[in-house]
Each structure stands twice: as structure tokens, then as C-alpha cells.
Amino acid sequence: MSFFADWWWKREFRRTIDAVDSLDAFSKQQVAKYVYDKMCLAAFRRKREGHAAELSALVAIAQFAKEQRHEALNRGAASRHDPAWAAASLVESWAVSKVGAARQKFSATVPAMIELELMALIDSQMSGIEKQEFQEKTW
Image 1: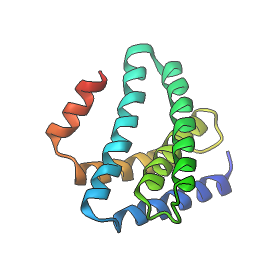
Image 2: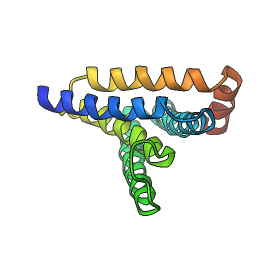
Image 3: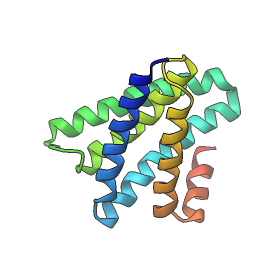
Image 4: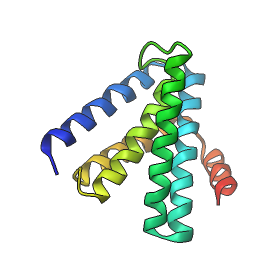
């Protein structure tokens, strides 16, 4: 576990979440839905198959998010203020922090802080009914 790695990961996440906060309402909602969808996928795997399956899903989600972030760059995303890039970056940060904490590369405070901030974003952008619909679609 590295204090520097924890600090850097939290800082990069915070920079992206701050950029998302400045997006227009529609874009911010789309980012929240993208993030929540991926969080539901990991939760589904944990519920159905256990912790090891969740970690496997998180690795796949992180890889997918990285590819999505690179695709956004290839399409011309120039900053954290691009919704597609930001959504993928937030998911990648979340998934990598969860895997990193499980593998003791990060302290548990990193994914805890990231999840807390992501849930604040999601709660501000999605109704309880919308969240339930996402869960039903996934579960």
C-alpha cells in the first residue's frame, strides 16, 4: 500500500468528478447512468457468484472503461469536460480502486471515497425509480 498511490488516485478522480459537476444537466445525467450501470454489473456478479466473480467483473469493467476512454480521445475528446471520456474515466477509477484495494495496492479508503462521491452524483441525477429499473435490468 502506498500513500502516494492513494493520494494520486483520489486526486485524479476528484479532478474528473469536478469536471462532471460543471457539465450541462443532460450530460451529467448520462454520465451518472453510465457509471451506475457498471456499478450494478459488479454488484450483480458479487450477489450471484461471490467476491472472486466481482473482482473478475471489475477487471473486465476497468478494461472496457479504458477502451471507452481511448475511443473518446480518438473521437476528439480534449479534456475531462467531454462526457464520454469523463464517464469512462470515472468507471475506470472506481473499478481499478476496488481491485487495487482487494490486492492491497490501495488502502480501503480509496474505493470508499470514490463510491461515496459516485453515489452522490448518481443520487443527484437519477430517481429511485430509475435506479430500480437499472437494477432490475441487471439482476
